[in-house]
Each structure stands twice: as C-alpha cells, then as structure tokens.
Length: 99
Image 1 (cartoon, rainbow, N blue to C red):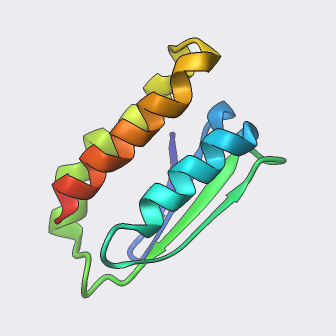
Image 2 (image 1 turned 90 degrees about the vertical axis):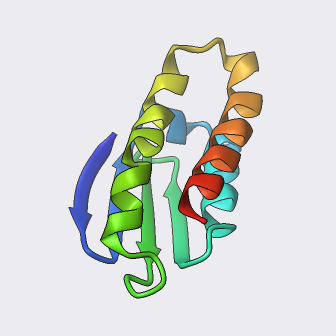
C-alpha cells in the first residue's frame, strides 16, 4: 500500500486506484485533511501521490494515522459495490485521526 515515504510526500499504490471513482474519493478525502497540499491519483498506474506540509502535518501525527492509511488496501477485499461507502468512511476516520 505505502510504496514510498519521504517526509512531505507519500506514494500509495493499490489496485483500488485503477477505479476512477475510488481514486477520486480517496483523493478528495485526503485533500480535506489540514496540511495536505496535493493529492494526485493516477488510475493508469494504480498510484496516488500525497504531498503534505511537514510543518502543519508533522511525522508524529502521521505515524498515528499510518494504520488507517494501510487500511485503504483492505478495501480491495470488499465487493466493488461496497467500496465507495467504505472509502468515504475511511477518509472521515483518517481526517479525524489527523486533526
């Protein structure tokens, strides 16, 4: 799920992101988090790039939310019809954890 991590930037990769609807839901959910400056999904590569302001979203807060970020991969096991609602809930939980 987390393919690479450099302070200020996280690259996620999941087959989920090849679904434009899920990719957009996750992207929009991430952009609602204070400190996230960019979230760009690429359905062609099943990737999502997240850039954040490391001053507003310090590593200590991100570390606490890492399990929720990893849970995005768990959505893969859900039936396709259940994924959008589950992705919305997960983004709400992630935003709450980071505030």
